[in-house]
Amino acid sequence: MGRAPGDIPPSRTAAELFRQDIREWIRTHAPAGLTGPPPRPAEAAVAEAAMEEAAAEAAAVWERSLLDARLICADWQPEYGGSGLSPQESLVFEEECARAGAPRIRRGAGERIVGPTILAHGTEEQKSRLLPGIVSGEHTYCLAYSEPEHGSDLASVGTRGTVTGDEIVITGRKAWVDGAERADRALVLCRTGGPDASGHRGLSCVVVPLDSGNGVVRRVVRQADGTADCRELSFDRSRAPLRDVVGEVNGGWRAVMTGLAHERAGRAAGRHLGFEAEFWDLVREADKTGRSRDPVIRDRLAWAYTRITLLRLLERRAAARTGAGAVPGADAAVTHLLSAEYHRRFGEIALDIMGAPALVRPDGDGYATDRWQEALLTGRAGTIRSGTAEILRDVIAERLLGLPKEPRAARRRPS
Image 1: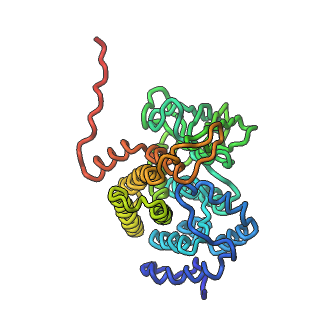
Image 2: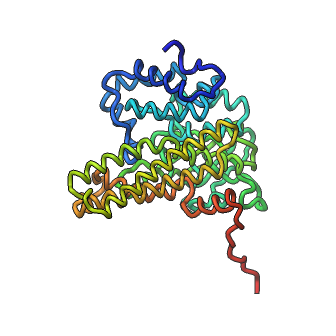
Image 3: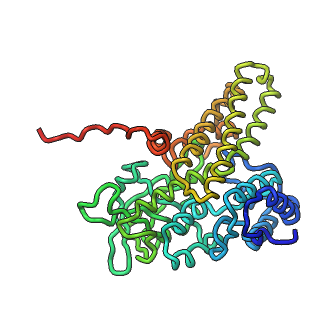
C-alpha cells in the first residue's frame, strides 16, 4: 500500500476507496496462520486469549503492525495515538478484518468506554497522559459503576469518595465488573457530594489504580455459562490522585451518560459480522440434522437473518450520523437493544435445532458448555449489561419518540 492507513487524506467521504486501501493493507500485513473465521459472539470474550495460545508470535507481529499503522483505537485523534478514522471508516475496518479473518485487537473497556469518556470530559493533560497508555496496552481498564445493592440504578450508588488534599479516597463495593481480572485501573463512579446531594447530583468519576496495596480486593463472580470473567471489587480507603477525576468533582453524571452511550454503541458496532458467521454455522447444523426441513425452524431462521440485516443497516446509519457530528445517544439504545434481544432469541433457536442433548451439561464448577449452550446462557446477560432492556425501552420511548415519561410510584407521605 502506498500510504499507511493513518495517512489517508483529510477528506473522509469515500469509505469504499478506503475499503480498497485497508483490504490491501490487511492482506499484506496479517501474518500467515493468524487469519481465520471471525470469532462468534459467544466466543468474543476469549478470542484474544485463544489467539495468544495458538499463535503468540504471529499475534505479537500483528499487534505491532496495527500499532505502527495507528489502527488500534483508530478513531481517536493522532495526538492521542489513534489515526483519526471517521466512524464509517472504522466500520469498514471492522468489516474487512472480519472478511479476512484477521483478529481485531481491542483494548476492552479502555477503548469502548473510558477513552471516549476522557476524550469528551477530560482535561488536555489527562488526554495526553492517559490515552496513549490505553492504545499501547500498557494499562488495561475496567468500568466500576454498578453495585450489589443498587444494580443498574447508578443514581443510587453508595460507594464513597472523600476528597483529602490532592487525593480522593474510595470506600465501597462494585459488582459485575467485566475484565477486572486483567485490569490494572478502573473508572470508578463514587459519591463525593454532601448529604443534600442525592440522586444524580454529587457523583464523580475517577481513575483508580487496582493494585492490592491500594486496598482493592477482587472476588470471582461465576456466570451462568460457567465462566468467571466477572469480578466484584471492594475498595477499602483506596486512593487516587484528585487530578484523575474525569470531569468535575460532583459533576460526574454527564461523564456517566457519555460512557454508557459509547458502551452501547461500542458493543453493537460490527456485531452483525460475528452474528452472521454464527448464523450460517447454525444453518449448516440444521441441514446436517435435517431440522432445516421443518417449516417452523425455517421461519425462525428467516427471522434471525432479517434481524442481522437490520442490525447491519442500523450500524451503518449510526456510523453516518456520528460521522456527521452527532454524539452517540438514544439512537445507540436502539442498536444495542436489537443486538441483545436478537442474540437471546438466537440462543433459543439454536437449542431447539440441536434438540434434547443440548439441554445437558457436565456437573460441577467450571463446567464446559458448547457454543450453542453458551449462546443461550450469555444471551440473557446481554439484555442486562449496559442498561437493561426495560431501561433501554424507556430511553427510546422518551428521548427518541417523545413519549411521556414513565409514571413513577407516588412518594409516601407521613400520615
